Length: 363
Image 1 (cartoon, rainbow, N blue to C red):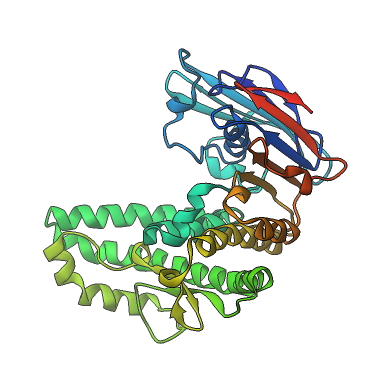
Image 2: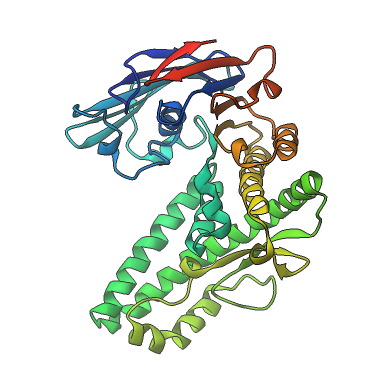
């Protein structure tokens, strides 16, 4: 599903022009603050209807303006050319696919799948547990619309249950517990399956690049049963009842998928505290590589890779090794600073653009 072109109107600092992207590999070269990441963000924005840099759409509007839009043309697996338009005006966002209004962003799933590599991915390794849960949930949501629905239901029930606890409406808890158990068990099952599949990919990648074996992702569900046993709804209802006094005292739900833990271990021992900064950064990059492979295994399609200055964080040998082990992709977009040896990674058909003050020029 390669991107063919992207057209901009008042999108951050980018010029209101169309950039043609008819190549399997596209490199954007420029100093910081010139618009390289904005170009990657716009492709991601078209793919998912949201930014990876902000939760506030108004922040994307070019300074001094009140509205923006980005239109992306891409070719699907049947060689049909399609169009996605995302526009923001009067404080409201509108998404269209082939001129038809998209009512829910989940309708974009699997339309133009992108896997993003960026500096903030380090949070998946050293950040709060919520960030690792987000990564697994995002990996599942890339292709499983049912998972998006079950996550939404779970979050709605959790919010209602927490409100009941704060307002001491304890008579509502039995009903909320049943819904929490129904949706939470499904989330745990899908997370277990995803992490099992990731471990078939992730540890092997790390060993091939570093020579260190035994690295794995360990899933520690909040609703603890026996090892590798998925709880039933009745099991979860029992746990929720046992913890109800604590929930009442604290005023929030203290167990469930929203409190699951995900760790990186080597031969069963927590690896991150002893890992070097370079090892942590490499793990973050390999997570994204595993995400791309996981997606391809699940749906049989290759994603678009968006790599935002991430190779800069590795030593030269690791950079070379990572590029050699990149998963198969429909298209690859990379950003580089001037002076970086991007020539090592380009092919004869690679397009290279110089980015200055939001404008682009092909080299």
